[in-house]
Amino acid sequence: MHLILRTLLLLVMSRRRSPLGIWQPGTIGLRVLPTDIDIAMHMNNGMYFSVFDLGRFDLMVRCGVWRRMRRRGWSPVAAGETISFRKSLQLGQRYTIETRIIGLDERAIYFEQRAVADGEIYARAVIATRLVSPTGPVPNEEIIAAFGAPPVELVLPEWIHAWRLSNALPSTRKPAPHVW
Image (cartoon, rainbow, N blue to C red):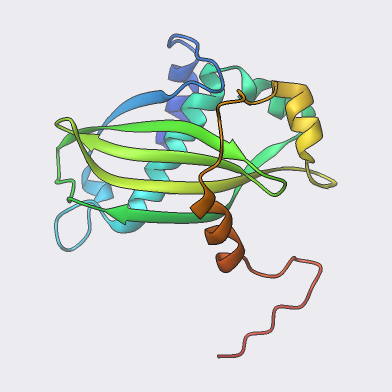
């Protein structure tokens, strides 16, 4: 909820930006705001995932996927995320969020996102996403039929398969008891 106004503004502004193909990288420029920082006076680690949402929304709007998803009643959800930090973004600092789809498997669509400032990567994340409809997850066959097949050279890095399997929680149809 803390980014709702920025998200709504971005959704409007992205429509005015140059169009992209779904398999092309997208970039948005941002600045570290007072609401983004923590007690250490740099961007809070959790804010990176929030601003990465903005990057994915921008890409989806600019390539026309957002409108087609919404027409079908599909919504994107994060299914898993991993991030590495290299440097801290400071209050007032300008940076870009770079976003690209790096592949998909039978369970998810994977995005790589980077926070970049002064030509350097400050943080990098991989986000596994799903599209869900009112009846449940949208199968890849429907997604590919709606948006097109990925380029043949787009091969999901092998480590992502291992990460996804080792990090996965049980399906919502199976019990997941809380036991330490």
